[in-house]
Image 1 (cartoon, rainbow, N blue to C red):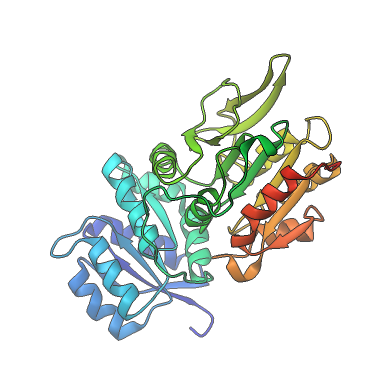
Image 2: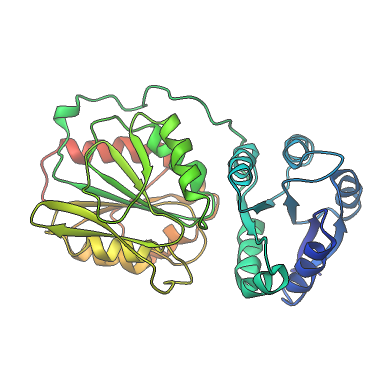
Length: 351
């Protein structure tokens, strides 16, 4: 058991506890060491087993999952994977859980649960591996809109540019920190954050309430406007297309790429087809390789690319792979990415 990820499953559904146990135990690199039907039982199981990862249901009897998470992160910080229902209230609670210190979340199916859970068994195990490897961040509440960390005359920034950002595990909080720090006069920003359908709309709304920039879930065929951030919807890949009238979004419900839809590589590769020197690429915290080859394509097409550094990443997977693929120009701590983007837009440069 020395190198095995030890998991405690906390869920009031006996079916979910059973399914998760079978899925997790099927991987020799992880093992369910205890299950609990509510947070009070979970408290004792966690004390007895000291797990590496906890899967935690949002809605449970005897104690709200958020309250249990808040107490856990204060008394015994442990990597947590939230199990969330695909509802509006479920998505709102999930984002609060991520603010309280949960590393990632898993969308719980509502129909044909056994088949649906088994269909993404690999994703469940991937998420557990990512959560186990994560660097726990200090919980931070989602604050109302505040002045950006970087102030600039909006007219001083080049508007003939496009910023493309990719993120995964830990990305919801990283994106919030990055976008909050940017001024209103930015060129269009396209974002792919690995997130299931049903969550991206709420995520965009929450960011819109916290940022000076306008933030929205991308729609198919809409013209790109300065001062606006477009979040890829969870059901489709997001591409950028150049028309005679200007740049527009394109949504595609095609097969997953790198096991993801939306995929960062799809966005980056589409942006690489734009005229040289128009794109700034950014890759943030996340597990896996999505975005690595796309970022290399961007660089070869004349883009200037930034990657989040290991010390500030929750999971240093995607940025590491992008660096290894030769697609990154600068590696920066998260708090320095916004000022660097603004600097790149202020300065007349070939990239």
